Image (cartoon, rainbow, N blue to C red; front, side, top):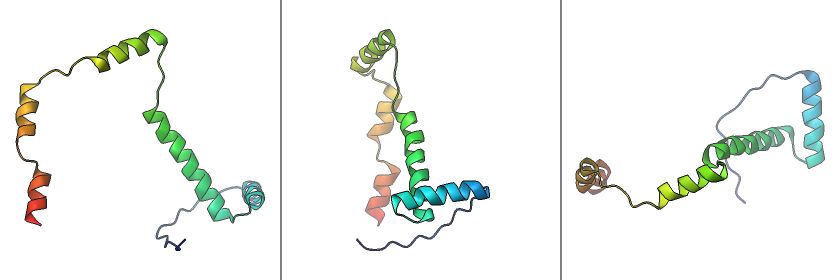
Length: 96
């Protein structure tokens, strides 16, 4: 796999005991501290973002939600008019 250039740094201040603990955990994974901290932080970030995508509802509310999703879409004349026009992004594609 080709090496990728990393062009940004993150500086973190920790207690000596926390650094020792992180180093020990990194050694257990057989990776250096930077890789361990980066991978752990990215995993946590993915979990945080997943909470914004996945949700649960009580059974009654879930059924009402599904009914709303299954309903035919309302026609909104102003939106229909808006989407009938060419997009500014379409205009940019033809200009380049």
